[in-house]
Length: 212
Image (cartoon, rainbow, N blue to C red; front, side, top):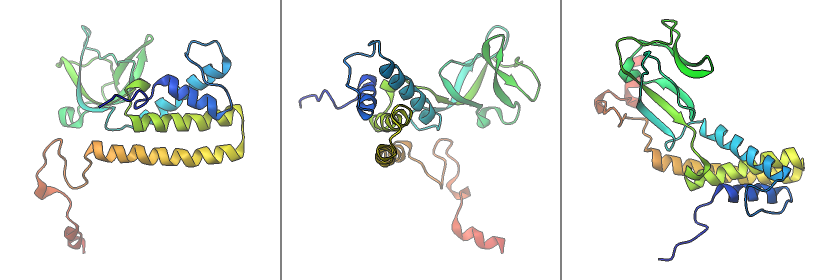
């Protein structure tokens, strides 16, 4: 089967989509010295970060281990959008937030008021990662590009009619992204596959009668 060159879009494709939405000509490279290209790329990356921060199956990891440094402190990677301790590994031993310590982002324990975690060599987190545009699933690339086109159009052109049309297209792209998410995520309200909880302990509608 022949490979299709346009089956997977790139950041350049997305930027050109934004440029065309505001009546600008597409470019062959992102290194072009152009204010329109710069605005389009910055808008794309902003929207990409906002959408990924919602947390999806492709950029969320549970029980991700991070080793402590020689001072028993935990440095947060730069590409983390959201981070929290995994409750199954740590329970309520700590209450953590991300906080700067002399310009370095670290995990701070609000419960014990310290950056230092004694008696352990690593911590386990539930993390939402920030991925490069190239690493997103195609439905999310399309969704990000369409939303970024609408945002850029509002900033650069401010045409209410065009914005309304792009908002409708954005809704379609989000629906396709959600369809991908439901298939990829294997979401289930009745049981927890990750931790294999007993199926007999999950919610069953007839138990509502016991509240009477």
